Image (tube, rainbow, N blue to C red; front, side, top):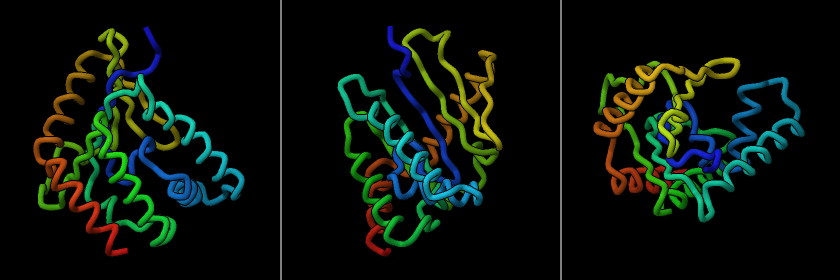
Length: 179
């Protein structure tokens, strides 16, 4: 049994999910989030994230289902060139069989993910499955089974009110071309 999740369900409301970020986007986010970060710090953070992303490409890659708030796609991070490359990268990754990307449109209105970003890490052994909730300065891992069940319900509802993969890809492509 491996230590990597078999399935990752992630909702992101402010950034492109980390496993789907380009290095330039990651560096720009790091600089925005940590204004005191040096260029070297930002680049090192991007390299570490890139190393984690390699798990997404390989024979034992987990299934990744990402729901991304539409605002994330409109927010230019870094520069128009960085954002265009990021959206193109996102579209490219969404073409992988084990990666599913949906956009939660503005038209969805109020939704159950409005409290913030989270990821559900699901393992073959259910007892190892967990939730990661992003907060400043790190994150929380709610441990109760009821918490995991609640976040699964929230994720399911977010996926239900999001654009399907085809419409999401079309929106991502259109926004990339506009930059």
